[in-house]
Length: 499
Image 1 (spheres, one colour):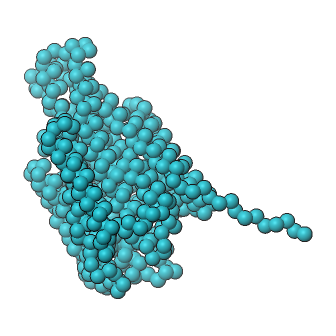
Image 2: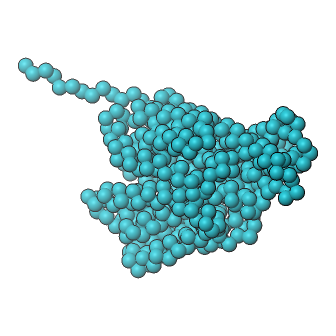
Image 3: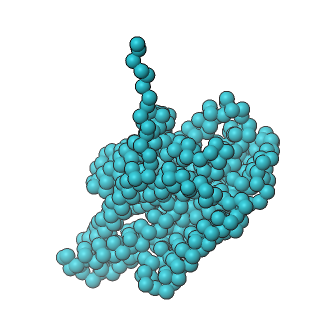
């Protein structure tokens, strides 16, 4: 049972952490744009975040093993489609299907553990599950970088069906079916569809604004439609007999504040990690393996300190760690923004960022669970996970628009000072709208080839630095949110003096 849960969650977590390293290679190989790369991430995140709570409810009602097997099967087929995609459209459709599969299998992996283990054994089982998932997620970028350097980005996706085979075999032969007899009789399909359509329309408008401009009719309509559909989602949740996001939970200032912190912090994390591989691989010329290895300090620190950080809320309350942790994370992003070519200048900020997240994650999760009644902890945790995914989804969309504009201005400035020859200008123009160094014409002389490559690389570096400063600002805004919304811990009572 535990092996199945670990294998299932590994599928989703590995995929989520490994794809970023492959983005520059995918953009180059498919000859596409930064906007398409945003959708490679966001198609998956959109479907997963909009359907995550529905997946958990469906598992409780229809059977956890059944929904888990369906999720793993969808994920495996989608990964096969990603690996064999002959164009961007097929790749994005397959990524969306993978997001749906992840929305079904991720909540089931923990539910299977809860159903299989007694309460006294459950904590140890969850600890093994979380540790194995963290190790898999941490090793994935390094493994993906190695596969990318020696074979192709397609191999990264084709590994998933191989992992799915033993997962399905053990599930069907060894895992008993389980349900929640007290599960609500209905599933909030209207809410999930409104959330999916609203977020999708909003993200489409944000990404399209990079090419069309904020005043374009398509952008204005998409953003307005997204805002309207999300408003309807809130109304629907207020009147739904079984809402996937119960509005009464947000009456708690702590619950609302922690989720706003989650939105900002994980938005910054998702946005920063989206652009970091472009900085390392395209601007600085590191191999994909080296770029993947740069994530290891972050994961090792986060995983190694997670047990220690779990006790912080008992000693200091939630407010202190949730101010300090995001502040340290903001410092990590700031250090990344000022890092230079030597490899260690990237590793040190990743250590700081890992420390900031380690201080934050366990207290944040505990604060979410402590802010709601005991019987609502499952849905509260699901909401917090969905909010983290939505934060990443929205920030990647916004930063893409910011980055395209900043990249274009940087290219133009470098072409003008000093003025570049016409051949160099033509070569550099091919980089507009994308985020990789384009294939330079063979007829271009070596000197002009070097200059064109240097202009594009310097513009990518300058633009990624901007996105990392924005990520730092979002993390700091998360710390300020915690300071403004979380109550100060009550002073501990002291025993009266003897006598």
